[in-house]
Structures are given as C-alpha cells and as structure tokens.
Length: 241
Figure (cartoon, rainbow, N blue to C red):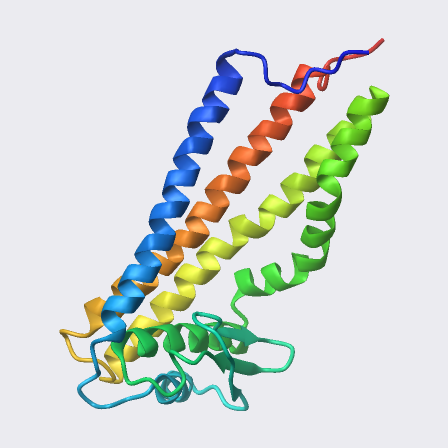
C-alpha cells in the first residue's frame, strides 16, 4: 500500500518548504539577538547599583504583590517564575548582577508573578492547558503515523487535532510573555529603577527574548501546516459514502 506523506512537488508543499526556511532563519536571528543583547547590556552597570533580585523585589512592591520568594538557580538565562511554589528563580548572571540586562530579565520574571497575583486571564489559561498540550504534543505524531499505516484518516485527523492543541500553547504563550515584559518596563520606569538611557537597553533585551517565543509560535504553525498537508494528501476531509 502506498501512503502519500504530502511531499509531492505541489504548491502546498513548496509553500511549506519556504515557510520552514523562514522559520529557521527567524528562530536563528531571535536566538542570536537574545545572546547578543544580553551580553552587550550585561556589560552596562546600572547607575543606582540595583541588582537583578532587588529589581524584581521592587517590581513586586510597586504592584502590591507579597509572599513571593526568591531562589538562586544555576545556569545562564534559566530564570523563571513557578506559580505553584510562588518562587522566582534567578540565574547566576542575573541574581546578584547590577547590569541593565539582569535588571530587565529579573523584572520580567516579577512581571509573571504580578500576572498571577492580579488574575491575568491569559497566563491562567496557559497554566490550565499545559497538561492537555503536553499530552497532545506527545501523541500527535504517533497517532498520525498509525493512521497512515492503517489507512485510517480518522486517526490521522486526531493526530492533527492533538498537534493543534499543542500549538495552542504557543499561541497563548506569546502574549503572556509580551505582557510580562510590558509590566516590567512600566514598573522600572515608574519607580525610577532605570534611567532614561538604561530603559531602552532593558527594552531591547526583553524584546529579543519575546521574539524567540514568536519564532516558536511560527514554527509550530508551519509544522501544523505540514501535518494538515499530509492529512489532506491521504484523503482527509473527503466524504466517504
């Protein structure tokens, strides 16, 4: 039995190839921008000597958020906020660093804590769908391949649907990350934690980080297109009487 993997030289597949090349280039640029900007502005010390941890604490105070704990985590750019433990973990390059880049990154993680504390709907949604999205991501390709092997378009359709569910996580994540950065920059400006010269540096660092999430979303959407092409090429969407 012959299975069409949607790789015939047609307009749809050619479009997917072009889009995938664009996504790879976009992701590479975004990662380079993050590394370049973080390294560049890690060499610029804040005029007030504020550390990353102190900046995050100040952002929380400015938003009336209490009860958040801090931890020092190893690695570079491994910073994160865990809503289950209510802990902001800051990396070696951020926790005690007085650089503009460190202040921006730490403030961003504090922005996530503020999102949870204020009931920001998108981040609540993202947290709620994580188990389902992980489930969908893990089973999408197996279901598609089993469907191909058995000639069962229904199973293939389930595989496409599961991957679409996983893609939903990326769709929700991008605005969440952008909003956290906006909250961070706003607090840094309103509280006078960074000068007018330092703020654009922090903004560039966080913008570059946001672009990595945009690249991840674009890649996920293009991969979803790939699955849809395979599904359609094998009879998906056709009526069977």
